[in-house]
Image (cartoon, rainbow, N blue to C red; front, side, top):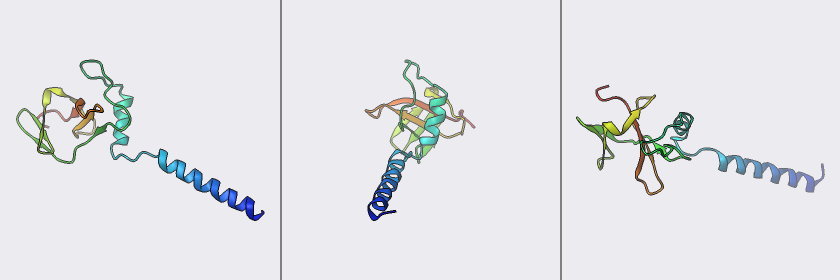
Length: 109
């Protein structure tokens, strides 16, 4: 293999690796985005719950008698939530960061 062919092969390999790296999911919630997407869940007004990487499981969730307090600032009533298959609270948001859908464990579980 000539030196120029070797350089071209190396560049193609590097480009391929960079392409795979940029297309790989980077969100820790990406795997759960897929169960939400596969479930074809919709909220009460008919919006799809999940788009690309817009669902997350918050790191701080406190349980109250009527719902969850997320990150010490946001109250989410139990009646807004659909059952969560993994028992965690998941919140899907619109681009303006308002809640689109909520998934969570049943109250008292």
